[in-house]
Image (cartoon, rainbow, N blue to C red; front, side, top):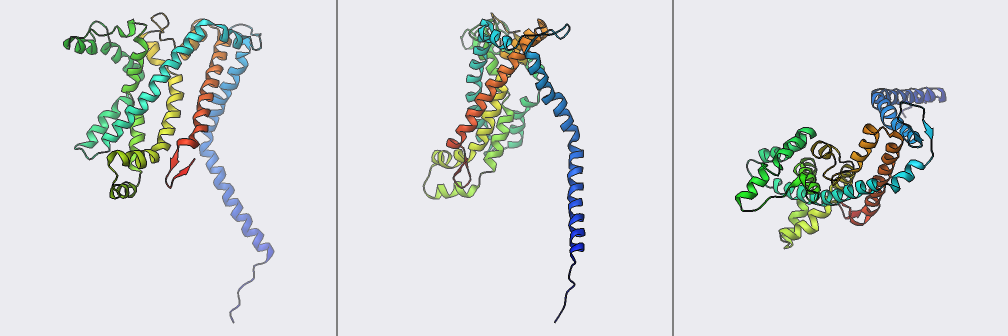
Length: 314
């Protein structure tokens, strides 16, 4: 009968200690490589947020001695007509951009998911606007939507249609910003395309064998399995749309008559033009609370409409 060597308790403890040391070394190595991001997050994100909260409790221009005012800055925001105007403009912009951007990006992704030659070129063309600088995009669209000699109004004139005044009109200024945002839906389209290509083709083929048409396959197979991607895009788009700033700042400065005064632009005016940094910090925290509120609503409602492969709900 073969006999094996019996491991003593001391040897077992030594081997366990060596294994633990190996794990500890790996963890320390991981934290070492993560340390630049961790330091950056603590100093420039978490630290800045904590500092801005304390600033929001003071009346200060950051150049003279701060005066503690408690929640007075928040009260001032809720009573300021211009804050309500900025909130309404931002909500209007978000209500247009999020659903329209979701639908348009999904339609483009469905088209680019087909076997159309040369599909790589088409995908590059549709994604290209997403990598262009925000300032360059704003300047380009300021020329395209110029009410007098812009390409859009010139094209409408050829059809006998008088084009709108766009950014010179209170009614058309926000739709103009929405049009610019929809032009840059390349990132959303790319995510939808990745989601479409991750759907098992066996499920779609099985539905076709059972007699389902193209719309039925999309409605009952493709769309449910794409809801995780839709969920992610909707959350990101809501967060981004409430923080719209560049296009409104470059093209209109909030005009005409504050028709494009978004919350972030209002915050910028109060903080960096009027030096009301305490009040501007309060507006920033109110904006943070609004974004958090809508994000939590989407996350909590996801159990009703977000599906994963196998029919399991989130």
